[in-house]
Image (cartoon, rainbow, N blue to C red):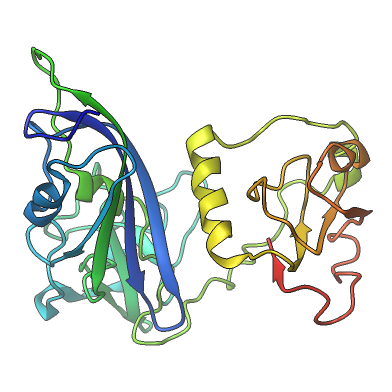
Length: 299
Protein backbone atom coordinates (compact mmCIF):
# COMPACT_ATOMS: atom_id res chain seq x y z
CA UNK A 1 0.00 0.00 0.00
CA UNK A 2 1.36 3.41 -0.99
CA UNK A 3 2.47 5.78 1.74
CA UNK A 4 2.72 9.56 1.72
CA UNK A 5 6.25 10.86 1.13
CA UNK A 6 7.74 14.26 0.36
CA UNK A 7 6.94 14.02 -3.39
CA UNK A 8 3.53 12.34 -3.11
CA UNK A 9 0.17 13.50 -4.39
CA UNK A 10 -2.81 12.49 -2.27
CA UNK A 11 -6.51 13.06 -1.68
CA UNK A 12 -6.97 14.47 1.81
CA UNK A 13 -10.10 15.30 3.81
CA UNK A 14 -9.33 18.29 6.06
CA UNK A 15 -11.36 19.17 9.15
CA UNK A 16 -10.88 22.47 10.96
CA UNK A 17 -12.41 22.49 14.45
CA UNK A 18 -12.91 25.39 16.82
CA UNK A 19 -15.10 26.47 19.72
CA UNK A 20 -17.28 29.58 19.87
CA UNK A 21 -19.16 30.87 22.91
CA UNK A 22 -22.14 28.62 22.22
CA UNK A 23 -21.12 25.72 19.99
CA UNK A 24 -18.42 23.42 18.69
CA UNK A 25 -17.71 23.91 14.99
CA UNK A 26 -16.21 21.57 12.40
CA UNK A 27 -15.58 22.83 8.87
CA UNK A 28 -14.66 20.24 6.24
CA UNK A 29 -12.79 20.59 2.97
CA UNK A 30 -11.78 17.84 0.54
CA UNK A 31 -8.46 18.32 -1.23
CA UNK A 32 -8.47 16.09 -4.30
CA UNK A 33 -4.84 16.54 -5.43
CA UNK A 34 -2.70 17.62 -2.51
CA UNK A 35 0.89 17.98 -3.66
CA UNK A 36 3.36 17.36 -0.83
CA UNK A 37 6.27 18.69 -2.84
CA UNK A 38 4.72 21.95 -4.00
CA UNK A 39 1.82 22.93 -1.73
CA UNK A 40 1.91 24.84 1.56
CA UNK A 41 0.97 23.19 4.89
CA UNK A 42 1.55 23.87 8.55
CA UNK A 43 4.83 22.09 9.27
CA UNK A 44 3.32 19.98 12.08
CA UNK A 45 0.61 18.66 9.77
CA UNK A 46 3.00 17.84 6.95
CA UNK A 47 5.29 15.94 9.33
CA UNK A 48 2.34 14.07 10.86
CA UNK A 49 1.12 12.94 7.42
CA UNK A 50 4.44 11.54 6.19
CA UNK A 51 4.39 7.72 5.96
CA UNK A 52 0.60 7.65 6.42
CA UNK A 53 -1.60 5.63 4.10
CA UNK A 54 -5.26 5.35 3.08
CA UNK A 55 -7.57 5.49 6.10
CA UNK A 56 -5.03 7.07 8.46
CA UNK A 57 -6.03 10.21 10.35
CA UNK A 58 -3.94 12.83 12.15
CA UNK A 59 -4.75 15.98 14.13
CA UNK A 60 -2.50 18.90 15.07
CA UNK A 61 -3.04 22.30 16.70
CA UNK A 62 -3.13 25.15 14.20
CA UNK A 63 -1.10 28.06 15.57
CA UNK A 64 -1.82 31.69 14.78
CA UNK A 65 1.06 32.63 12.51
CA UNK A 66 1.51 33.89 8.97
CA UNK A 67 -1.50 31.82 7.78
CA UNK A 68 -3.99 33.19 10.32
CA UNK A 69 -2.46 36.15 12.12
CA UNK A 70 -3.14 36.50 15.87
CA UNK A 71 -5.72 39.08 16.91
CA UNK A 72 -4.36 42.60 17.18
CA UNK A 73 -5.91 45.87 18.33
CA UNK A 74 -3.93 47.54 15.52
CA UNK A 75 -6.39 45.96 13.07
CA UNK A 76 -9.35 47.85 14.55
CA UNK A 77 -10.10 51.24 12.99
CA UNK A 78 -12.58 54.05 13.46
CA UNK A 79 -13.81 55.49 10.17
CA UNK A 80 -16.33 58.04 9.02
CA UNK A 81 -19.72 56.54 8.13
CA UNK A 82 -19.33 58.09 4.67
CA UNK A 83 -16.35 55.77 4.02
CA UNK A 84 -18.76 52.84 3.85
CA UNK A 85 -20.01 52.86 0.27
CA UNK A 86 -23.73 52.25 0.69
CA UNK A 87 -24.23 52.24 -3.09
CA UNK A 88 -21.44 49.82 -3.99
CA UNK A 89 -23.96 47.27 -5.28
CA UNK A 90 -25.74 48.60 -8.34
CA UNK A 91 -29.40 49.36 -7.68
CA UNK A 92 -29.19 48.59 -3.96
CA UNK A 93 -28.49 50.64 -0.85
CA UNK A 94 -26.75 48.83 2.03
CA UNK A 95 -26.26 50.15 5.54
CA UNK A 96 -23.66 48.65 7.92
CA UNK A 97 -25.09 46.37 10.59
CA UNK A 98 -23.61 45.48 13.97
CA UNK A 99 -21.53 42.30 13.91
CA UNK A 100 -21.93 41.72 10.18
CA UNK A 101 -19.06 41.06 7.74
CA UNK A 102 -18.57 42.94 4.48
CA UNK A 103 -15.89 42.84 1.74
CA UNK A 104 -13.18 45.44 2.23
CA UNK A 105 -13.98 46.79 -1.23
CA UNK A 106 -17.09 48.40 0.32
CA UNK A 107 -14.75 50.86 2.07
CA UNK A 108 -13.45 54.10 0.54
CA UNK A 109 -10.14 55.86 1.20
CA UNK A 110 -8.89 53.08 3.51
CA UNK A 111 -5.45 51.50 3.20
CA UNK A 112 -5.70 47.86 2.09
CA UNK A 113 -9.26 48.20 0.81
CA UNK A 114 -9.29 47.95 -2.97
CA UNK A 115 -12.17 47.28 -5.34
CA UNK A 116 -10.94 43.81 -6.29
CA UNK A 117 -10.44 42.69 -2.70
CA UNK A 118 -13.03 40.36 -1.14
CA UNK A 119 -11.19 40.01 2.18
CA UNK A 120 -13.82 40.60 4.90
CA UNK A 121 -13.99 43.13 7.67
CA UNK A 122 -16.46 43.24 10.55
CA UNK A 123 -18.60 46.17 11.66
CA UNK A 124 -18.27 46.24 15.46
CA UNK A 125 -19.66 49.65 16.46
CA UNK A 126 -21.20 52.68 14.82
CA UNK A 127 -23.15 55.84 15.46
CA UNK A 128 -24.55 58.56 13.24
CA UNK A 129 -21.13 59.77 12.04
CA UNK A 130 -18.53 57.07 12.72
CA UNK A 131 -18.01 53.38 12.03
CA UNK A 132 -15.62 51.06 13.87
CA UNK A 133 -14.32 48.14 11.82
CA UNK A 134 -12.29 45.04 12.66
CA UNK A 135 -9.82 43.80 10.01
CA UNK A 136 -8.75 40.75 12.06
CA UNK A 137 -9.42 37.30 10.61
CA UNK A 138 -12.76 35.88 11.92
CA UNK A 139 -10.84 33.00 13.58
CA UNK A 140 -8.05 35.15 15.04
CA UNK A 141 -9.24 34.74 18.65
CA UNK A 142 -10.18 31.05 18.49
CA UNK A 143 -8.10 27.99 19.36
CA UNK A 144 -7.92 25.89 16.22
CA UNK A 145 -7.26 22.23 15.49
CA UNK A 146 -6.66 20.81 12.03
CA UNK A 147 -7.32 17.14 11.26
CA UNK A 148 -6.57 15.28 8.04
CA UNK A 149 -7.74 11.88 6.76
CA UNK A 150 -5.99 10.17 3.85
CA UNK A 151 -8.39 8.95 1.14
CA UNK A 152 -5.95 8.15 -1.66
CA UNK A 153 -2.20 8.19 -2.28
CA UNK A 154 -1.16 8.53 -5.91
CA UNK A 155 2.59 8.46 -5.46
CA UNK A 156 4.80 10.87 -7.37
CA UNK A 157 5.04 11.73 -11.04
CA UNK A 158 6.95 14.12 -13.27
CA UNK A 159 5.45 17.61 -13.36
CA UNK A 160 5.93 20.57 -15.65
CA UNK A 161 4.37 23.74 -14.32
CA UNK A 162 1.22 23.84 -12.24
CA UNK A 163 0.06 25.78 -9.24
CA UNK A 164 0.81 25.54 -5.53
CA UNK A 165 -2.01 25.66 -3.00
CA UNK A 166 -2.00 27.04 0.52
CA UNK A 167 -4.47 24.62 2.09
CA UNK A 168 -5.07 26.60 5.27
CA UNK A 169 -5.85 29.70 3.23
CA UNK A 170 -8.21 27.71 1.01
CA UNK A 171 -10.06 26.35 4.05
CA UNK A 172 -10.36 29.66 5.91
CA UNK A 173 -11.03 32.28 3.24
CA UNK A 174 -14.70 31.64 2.45
CA UNK A 175 -16.73 32.50 5.51
CA UNK A 176 -15.42 30.25 8.28
CA UNK A 177 -15.98 32.04 11.59
CA UNK A 178 -18.53 34.53 10.25
CA UNK A 179 -21.31 33.12 12.41
CA UNK A 180 -19.55 33.63 15.75
CA UNK A 181 -20.53 36.68 17.79
CA UNK A 182 -18.32 39.67 18.46
CA UNK A 183 -17.71 40.05 22.21
CA UNK A 184 -20.92 38.10 22.87
CA UNK A 185 -23.08 40.77 21.21
CA UNK A 186 -26.01 39.71 19.04
CA UNK A 187 -25.25 40.06 15.35
CA UNK A 188 -27.86 42.16 13.56
CA UNK A 189 -29.16 39.67 10.99
CA UNK A 190 -32.78 40.77 11.03
CA UNK A 191 -32.97 44.51 10.32
CA UNK A 192 -33.56 44.23 6.58
CA UNK A 193 -36.01 41.29 6.74
CA UNK A 194 -33.55 38.62 5.49
CA UNK A 195 -36.20 35.86 5.44
CA UNK A 196 -38.49 37.75 3.06
CA UNK A 197 -39.21 35.55 0.06
CA UNK A 198 -38.13 36.63 -3.42
CA UNK A 199 -40.83 34.42 -4.96
CA UNK A 200 -44.23 34.20 -3.26
CA UNK A 201 -45.49 31.41 -5.52
CA UNK A 202 -47.09 28.61 -3.51
CA UNK A 203 -44.45 25.99 -2.62
CA UNK A 204 -46.79 23.19 -3.63
CA UNK A 205 -46.37 24.27 -7.27
CA UNK A 206 -42.59 23.83 -7.16
CA UNK A 207 -42.79 20.51 -5.32
CA UNK A 208 -45.60 19.10 -7.47
CA UNK A 209 -42.96 17.43 -9.66
CA UNK A 210 -40.72 14.83 -7.95
CA UNK A 211 -36.97 15.43 -8.22
CA UNK A 212 -35.21 12.14 -7.56
CA UNK A 213 -31.73 13.64 -7.81
CA UNK A 214 -29.01 14.37 -5.28
CA UNK A 215 -28.13 18.03 -4.76
CA UNK A 216 -24.71 17.26 -3.24
CA UNK A 217 -21.67 15.48 -4.66
CA UNK A 218 -20.59 12.10 -3.32
CA UNK A 219 -17.87 13.50 -1.07
CA UNK A 220 -20.18 16.05 0.57
CA UNK A 221 -22.74 13.28 1.21
CA UNK A 222 -20.01 11.13 2.78
CA UNK A 223 -19.01 13.97 5.11
CA UNK A 224 -22.61 14.66 6.15
CA UNK A 225 -23.27 10.95 6.75
CA UNK A 226 -20.15 10.74 8.91
CA UNK A 227 -21.22 13.82 10.85
CA UNK A 228 -24.68 12.37 11.51
CA UNK A 229 -23.13 9.11 12.73
CA UNK A 230 -21.31 10.98 15.51
CA UNK A 231 -24.56 12.09 17.13
CA UNK A 232 -27.39 9.83 15.96
CA UNK A 233 -27.27 6.40 17.56
CA UNK A 234 -29.23 3.15 17.11
CA UNK A 235 -32.67 3.12 18.71
CA UNK A 236 -33.25 6.87 18.48
CA UNK A 237 -36.39 8.54 17.12
CA UNK A 238 -35.38 11.07 14.45
CA UNK A 239 -37.27 13.67 12.42
CA UNK A 240 -36.02 14.35 8.88
CA UNK A 241 -37.27 17.89 8.30
CA UNK A 242 -37.81 19.04 4.68
CA UNK A 243 -37.27 15.42 3.74
CA UNK A 244 -36.92 13.93 0.28
CA UNK A 245 -35.91 10.59 -1.22
CA UNK A 246 -32.52 10.52 0.60
CA UNK A 247 -31.84 11.19 4.28
CA UNK A 248 -28.03 10.72 4.10
CA UNK A 249 -28.01 8.71 7.33
CA UNK A 250 -25.73 5.65 7.59
CA UNK A 251 -27.39 2.76 5.74
CA UNK A 252 -26.86 0.27 8.58
CA UNK A 253 -28.10 2.60 11.33
CA UNK A 254 -31.14 1.00 12.95
CA UNK A 255 -33.44 3.67 14.35
CA UNK A 256 -36.61 3.24 16.39
CA UNK A 257 -38.31 5.73 14.09
CA UNK A 258 -37.31 7.99 11.19
CA UNK A 259 -40.18 10.31 10.31
CA UNK A 260 -39.94 12.39 7.14
CA UNK A 261 -41.71 15.73 6.72
CA UNK A 262 -41.80 17.04 3.18
CA UNK A 263 -43.88 18.30 0.27
CA UNK A 264 -43.65 15.62 -2.44
CA UNK A 265 -45.24 12.24 -1.80
CA UNK A 266 -43.33 10.36 -4.50
CA UNK A 267 -39.98 11.56 -3.16
CA UNK A 268 -40.90 10.50 0.37
CA UNK A 269 -42.20 7.12 -0.80
CA UNK A 270 -38.83 6.48 -2.46
CA UNK A 271 -36.90 7.07 0.78
CA UNK A 272 -36.27 3.52 2.01
CA UNK A 273 -34.92 4.69 5.36
CA UNK A 274 -38.13 6.42 6.46
CA UNK A 275 -40.48 4.51 8.76
CA UNK A 276 -43.21 7.07 8.07
CA UNK A 277 -43.79 10.42 6.42
CA UNK A 278 -46.08 13.44 6.52
CA UNK A 279 -46.90 15.97 3.80
CA UNK A 280 -46.80 19.39 5.44
CA UNK A 281 -46.11 22.94 4.18
CA UNK A 282 -44.20 24.79 6.91
CA UNK A 283 -44.56 28.11 5.07
CA UNK A 284 -48.34 27.88 5.29
CA UNK A 285 -48.39 26.36 8.77
CA UNK A 286 -45.06 27.05 10.49
CA UNK A 287 -45.72 24.72 13.40
CA UNK A 288 -44.25 21.23 13.38
CA UNK A 289 -47.23 18.87 13.85
CA UNK A 290 -45.68 16.63 16.50
CA UNK A 291 -45.76 16.58 20.28
CA UNK A 292 -42.93 18.10 22.30
CA UNK A 293 -40.03 15.70 22.97
CA UNK A 294 -41.26 13.29 20.31
CA UNK A 295 -37.77 12.97 18.78
CA UNK A 296 -34.21 12.66 20.00
CA UNK A 297 -32.84 14.54 16.98
CA UNK A 298 -33.94 16.61 13.99
CA UNK A 299 -31.96 16.62 10.75
